Amino acid sequence: MMESTQVVKALAALAQSTRLGVYRLLVAAGPEGMAAGQIAEKLNASAATMSFHFKTLSHAGLIESRQDGRFVYYSANFEVMNGMVAYLTENCCGGDPAACKVPDKIC
Image (cartoon, rainbow, N blue to C red; front, side, top):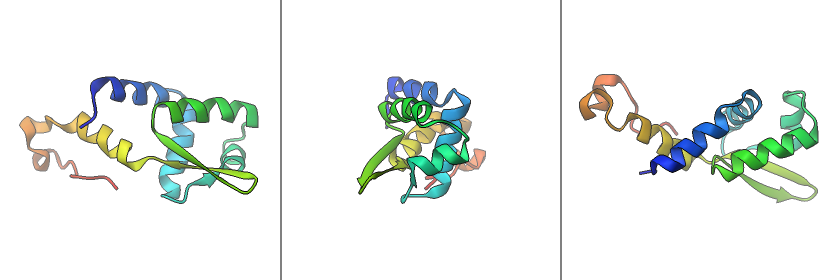
């Protein structure tokens, strides 16, 4: 289970429209992720701006990166995402997630 400080850090990182957009793209892309340039293009943002946002999301543990040749690929950290959802819904409906229709695991 995640600690509240980790959840606060993750939520703070997502509390900005560009970073939220990046994260949603990466969740949709799945484990393979996307190249940094593709993400910047889809969000109509400069490489310098994206670098700042990638760093913030990475520092919060929400995304991971890997180098492939001259490209950097980013992907969502689904373990952290699932931990955050579990933390937020831990006591949902008196501890009965079925009553709230909260899935046990998102991905």
